[in-house]
Length: 611
Image (cartoon, rainbow, N blue to C red; front, side, top):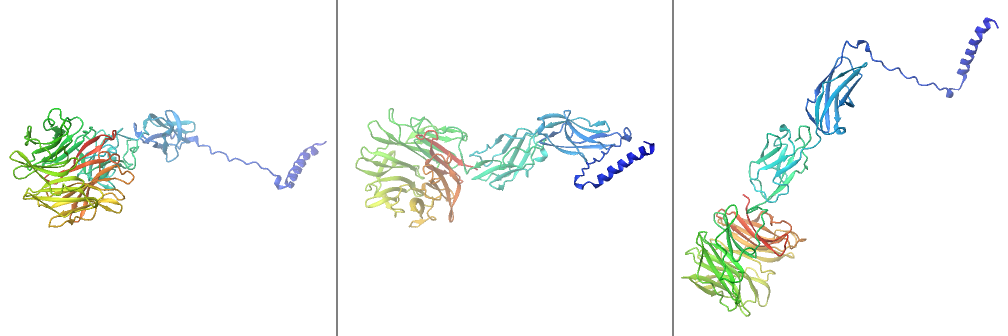
């Protein structure tokens, strides 16, 4: 084959192949993707414009929380990659403008070495190493005053919170740390200790009573790492009641069987009590720190049984007088009366013997006449066939008695009250049943010239004998008696200022619903304001849990003073509640309350105003 043929044959073959290819169906054409060539960095200037990496933030030794914001500044040639190295390990890449919010969860808390590395054309540049402390733990409360949930906080309380670690001083002010009464702000001076761990709030005014107080922190209050204080959005809270217990609220209270309560005009409370730890009647005065005994316990002759009742009274000069019922071994009883001399108890006459033979004595009362300081006692005495109220007055060292008219002819009698008006006339009140009438009636009488003058009954046919009575310096008599209203027992307050009983407002109870209210004490303070003390269940569901409610009459309505009162709110019943006032009208309270651990025992509680 000649050279010409040899040279044309391959060309012809190639043309045939190309022509055949063009004639093939389009669906059968498979042309592979052609990848675009990578941009190769221009490395011609290597060495002429070296890279430099400098920190903007964070500072060396800075603390960061769950998120660390990092920023660096690069100069020189543009890098191919920029990486964050933590303790020598690359953990994240930075893109222009080289700001990164890095999550720190992959590393432990504590100090770490942070370096930023830039690479280009096989060369790299490292930032200076910075030590950064990772702290994801929020500051927490390790101590606070008052405690969360505290019940008895004074109105002048300084509020203090100790934190587990310092917070930033600039984050603490009266806008970010707030003191609230309910939803209302209370003005307070907010300060932070030099070490940043103790926050103090000093209220600029006394805290409002009968309120739930709270301290709330804004999330902007943080530690140096930016962690907010670990606290509920509701903060921590406590109660500021209208009354505070005398003495440490954690100190075990005295167990009592009977007690009587009085308040000196200057505001010092006294109690006379019978019960555990005493062999007789123990009289005690509050000295500002603790209860201090006035002399030894009072009792009858050696071997006499335990006294059964005691009653305390302060005369016009605040001299204590005490009387008690003293059983004898032969089954009889005596009534003993003593006066405090300032250093010892002095007997006032011989023991009082009941008028009726073999009589029991209950409902003992004592008052002292404002002129001459003559004591008067009254009590109910009863034997197997007779019942009467007897009044004894000390005259020339001897007790002289009289039976109260109308008291002998009643089937039953209780709730005896004795008061003296401005003329030292004896005002007696009692609850008694009547022949032919259901329920209980209230009888009020006044001794005048040796005889009794009766008042119209302020209440008849009541379901309960509970009532209270007081007499003002103007001679006004006020009584509170039980009445039925809408299926439950309410209280009706009436006064006798001008020859007839007048209502003081409408029938009253404190707790809505089918709960029975009872007035246990009435008092006209030195300013002539009427105060009423109620015992009432807090709810229908817990009818045995009775609390106290203090009300004061203001022109045309009853004003609540504080909320439901008990030493153990919502858990145990109170009883035998009594009140007293000082010369400024401040209210003091005393009651016995079932022991939370032993329902057979009653403990004595005395409360002062929270002012």
